[in-house]
Length: 160
Image (tube, rainbow, N blue to C red; front, side):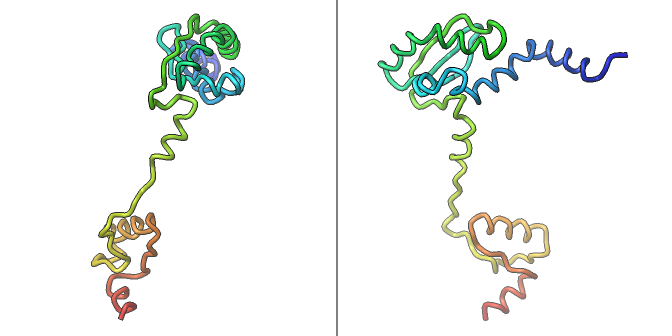
């Protein structure tokens, strides 16, 4: 009887093309360490297309310079992945696209919440011990308004 670990490794390895997808995800996260900080500042990973590594650059000068680095980039990336996964580098202008090595940062930055103009307050006409009232209290906390403990009637008495 085989160990579960070896069976899973065999299954996942065949399912995900020898684990290439997982290694590529690590490659995007560690992009600067793999190709070097100078090259990473110049060319950012955008993805793959068959055996082509897609890189994004800011402008035409960076596009030209990245083409000179293409053999080095291929060597570094394939060595990191442990096999020849890519045989070509294709450069494109970023044009506002978010590179894969920065994707998680961009998601966090886009989650800026602004309170609605008529948010209301902690003394809204909802009993704070009801499910809807508790949900509303949590919503108020998101925007820095302090919820009132107890039910609605206690909140009104505190304001008088």
